[in-house]
Amino acid sequence: MSLLMAVSSSPRRNGNTGLLLNSFVEGVKSQGWETEICRIHYLNIGMCQACDFCAKEGECILDDDMQYIYSRIKEAQGLVVASPVYFGTVSGQLKIFIDRFQCWWQAKYRLNSPFVSEEEGKKGFFICVSALTNKNYCANAAEVAKVLFHNLNYRYIDSLSFEGFDIKGSIKEHPDALEKAFESGKKFASK
Image (cartoon, rainbow, N blue to C red):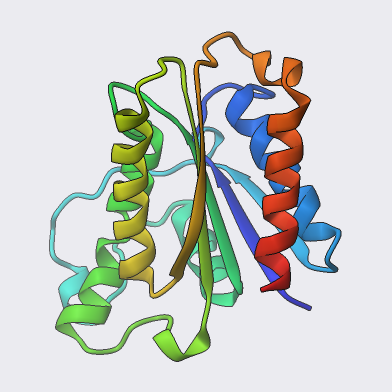
C-alpha cells in the first residue's frame, strides 16, 4: 500500500492550513493510500547547526523528532507539505524543517548517495494559505517548497494556493476550497 506523508507547518490546530491539508489527505485516502499527518509545530525539531557533521555520512547529528520524519519520508511514495504564508513565504516552522534536510542535500550532492533515488518516482504537492490576496506571496512559498522536493528527489506535481483567509477556520465558509483540496488529493493519488 502506498504511503502519503502529510506535513502541516501551521501552529494553529484546525486552522485553514490544517483543514485544507485534511481534505487533501481524505482525497488521497479515498484512493486506497495509507496516510500520516505530521504537525511539525508540535514536534521537537531543532534548528540546523551548520556543523557539517552530515557532510561525512549524510546523517544529522541532532537526535530529535526529525529522525522519525526522515525514515517516514524515505518510506513514503508521496509527500504533501502545507504552510500558512508569513511575510510572503513559508512559515518559520517549515523553514526550520526544510533546513534540517541539509543532511539529505549532503547525501545527494556531496556523497552521491541520496536517501531517495529519482527512479523511485516519489511525488510532492504543496498547499499554502495566505491572509492577503497577493498571489506573489503564495508563489514565493511554492518556490521554497519546490526546492525542498527537488533536494529530496520527490517530483513536484502541483500546488494549491488560497488567498484572503486570515481568520482561523474561515476556509470552512468556502466548501468549494475544501472540495478542491479533496479532489486534488484524489488526483495526486491516482497519477
